[in-house]
Amino acid sequence: MAPDVPGAAERAPRPRRNITTAFVVSRIAVLAVAAAILLYAVPPLVAAESWLGLGVLGAATALIGYLYLTPRLVPAKYLVPGTVFLIAFQVVPVVYTVTTAFTNFGDGHRGSKQDAVVAIETGSVRQAPGSPEYALTAALRDGELVFLLVDPDTKQAGLGTAEGLEPLAGARVGVTGKVLSAPGLTVLKAPEAAARAKEISALSVPTPGGAIKANGLSRAVEGRAALVYDAACDCVRGEGGPWTADESQGYFVNAAGDHLAQGWQVGVGLDNFARVLTNPTISGYFAGVFGWNVVFALASVAGTFALGMSVALALHHPRMRGTRIYRIAIVLPYAMPAFAMLMVWRDMFNRDFGLINQLFGLDVDWLGEPLTARLAVILVNLWLGFPYMFLVTTGALQAIPRELTEAASIDGATPWKGFRKVTLPLLLVALTPLLISSFAFNFNNFNAIALTTDGGPFPAENPQVGATDLLITYTFRLAFGAGGAQFGFAAAVSVFIFAIVAIISATAFRRTRKQEEVYA
Image (cartoon, rainbow, N blue to C red):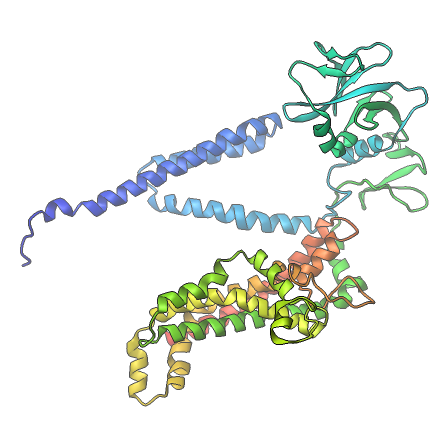
């Protein structure tokens, strides 16, 4: 029987008390966050009359309150936060991306049909002959830009907003005919108004016969819309029209096949996916870009793992001294901001002034030739990525018992054979999931290309696809290039990329399970 230790009875409950305190603190934190979200979200939901959203929010908050105030359902208290974050940051973005891929969402197609009609009518406003010219003062009301207008005939002040024109009581008008101050409004000074010139020119105040728009920063004129929507024919009448609504495209189209710039969001089915596969401008280069994408990801993972593992093995040797200093020095690239380091490396590869050419006495156009540009981005990614592999390999090596390598040495295995037959297989069992995730990351490593070569060099016959373009940078250029933002098309290509990475990752994980069974 173990002897009694004085004071043991008093000390024994302490770990239990610490666990209970931590649990209470975490429970209070979760309830506080839930209450804060409720208080923050209720006013805008009520203002938008989103009763369904308000009901879902109330039910979720009540469920969380019940769950964390009852002493039962302990496992759920730990599962719910993780599940909520999984849904919010994984499931919802994926579902939203997939649904967007079946629409024409993008520049010119961001809102509803009613929004498009309003934009078309206000954008076509032209100054009507004989219309008054108002003295304009830009102001802010609760952070919203408004117009303070003075009629030149009646000298009455009015408040112009995106909803319309209304009388302005209590305004003080100066000798220049402009409003100097008004209750509840902050008049913008000249430099402040100049900084908001784009917002001022974009604001349109609807009137019964047209709209009032700014003409500079001190004058506003009333105009008439050159394009007017006619609900009877579901068309826009005016210049070049009539423009008939085409629900399949989300545009107003005339007899010549032209369409107005402003459209609305509609479902397009599989059109975005068909465009990826059938448009020769896209599909003709897809295979080449995909091949280089796979080479880049594999070379980055294999190179960083080989270098990181080699350094970790060297520092793991029992006779190695000063390992702490070496480890700090090796981790420094990983601690630096990647975007800044990528731009530094881009300048180092400059043909005329770059450090690499000057240091080694070379005259290589690193970023101007396809082969050297690809080698350069792989080298940069190697420098940025090997500290991570060094860290995870160091941790995995410390979990491998030294008795295994010592037993292999006693059995007559050489250091290389012991590493290949004992250490490496055990490392791969532990690190293969990290290698797969690293492959997925590098497959979509946008910054590594965009901040160094920007996809170049580009052939003279095709400035759309460069020698170092990955699928993600190629997609970005196609979807957000000179033609404006095409979010639906970008989402469709993203679905293709997701499917490719998912298939490769699933295959690799299957092989990993077989390997785990062998070394279990």
